[in-house]
Length: 140
Image (spheres, rainbow, N blue to C red):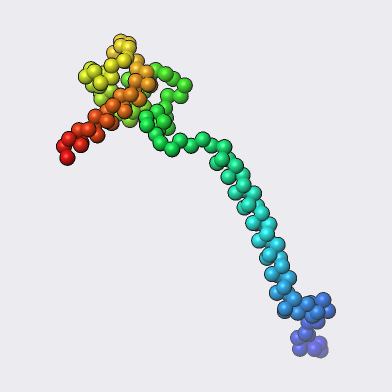
C-alpha cells in the first residue's frame, strides 16, 4: 500500500531567500511605481485643463439677458414675438402688452406679429429691471 501521509511541499530556494521582509519591500516598490504612474497621468490632465481654462474669456458681470440666455436666437438681430418671449423668459402676451403700452417702442408690425430687434429687447429688459427696482425702493 501506498503511504497515506501527506507529503510536504518543498519551497523553492528563491522564495526562501526573499522571505517575508523581502516580499513586503517588493510589494511596496510596485505600489510606489503604480502611484507615480497614476500621479503623472493626473498631472497631465490637470495641465490640459488649466490650459483650456486659461484660453477662455470669462465676463465678470452680466447686464442684459442676451448674455444670460442659453437658447438665444443665434446669429439673429431681429425676432418675432414668440422668440422675443422665449429670449426674455416671458409670455407672448406680456411682450405684446409691453408693445401696446409703449414700453417697447421700436418694432415692425408684421400681420398679427411684431418684429423686434434684440437690442431693443435688451434695452426693455434693463429699463424694466430699473423700474421695478425703483418701485420697490419707493414702497419701502
